[in-house]
Image 1: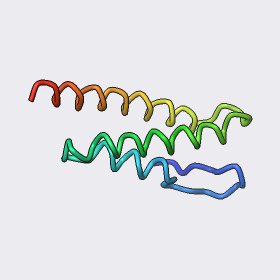
Image 2: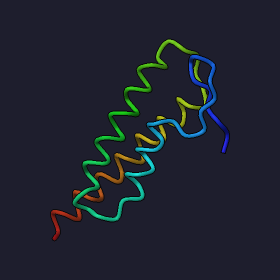
Image 3: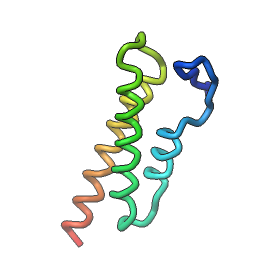
Length: 84
């Protein structure tokens, strides 16, 4: 996995948003999953806001992909709750 360079020039191979995202998608307990999805989404949106004025980067692409995946996962969890 490629490391990401933050705006201050530091390399970070596992930024906070990514840790929260991975925690959400790996969560097996549906009771905890929606909360973890919300935490991850918030961290991703915060990071995306930080990158608004920077040129398009690999990290911005990863943020967009993560948001789409969380949206799909959230929909699945909500449908499973309704059918239970």
